[in-house]
Image (cartoon, rainbow, N blue to C red; front, side):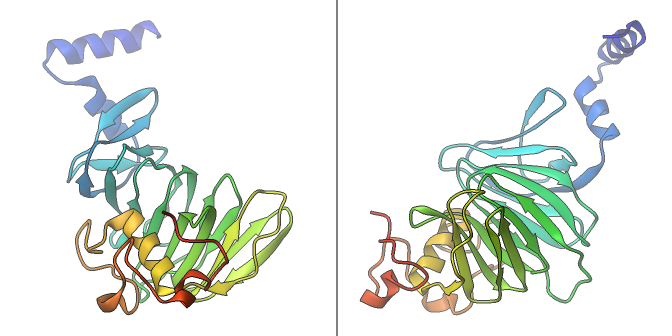
Length: 242
């Protein structure tokens, strides 16, 4: 560490000011935490901080949730990003309410943006493929033994080196690797949608402020609930998790 930097930090400590707060303020703020259940952290510039409701999040933060934890962040004025348990996602770039770039390293996310706001394309890089969303609400994460992407509202392109598919509301796809084409878009069953939402926001669909139930969520089966036989085949032939 350069001498002038060490002197600055020493001066801050003598003045009773925590250096990490000053360093955080120098970063570009992307939003704040709306809801937190369990232990979640933000990692940036070699530092890790615990997250609580009201805490700011910054560009280049790596948000990480613990076992059974949930996290909800507001990005910009109205966009919400929700993380399920054991999820790691980096805010790589974010233009306030108009687009951005996220890197999903593992786990499940739900992206939620009002459809009546101007919006640019959001890019999400995952280990299985790339997501380009002009949509306002979509899920990405583990689903029925595969990595799934489901669109509730808007248009989402999902690409691998093997090909690209376009998703419209009510349809999802599955990914198994960067070299393999995405599965043909298919309508997801209400059971599968309910399980995807519950993985991120819980069975009540209200985590992180405001109702974010999927369409028809009023009679959505609860996670693990029984469904009709057809519920287990719509959107893929994989059995529901036991």
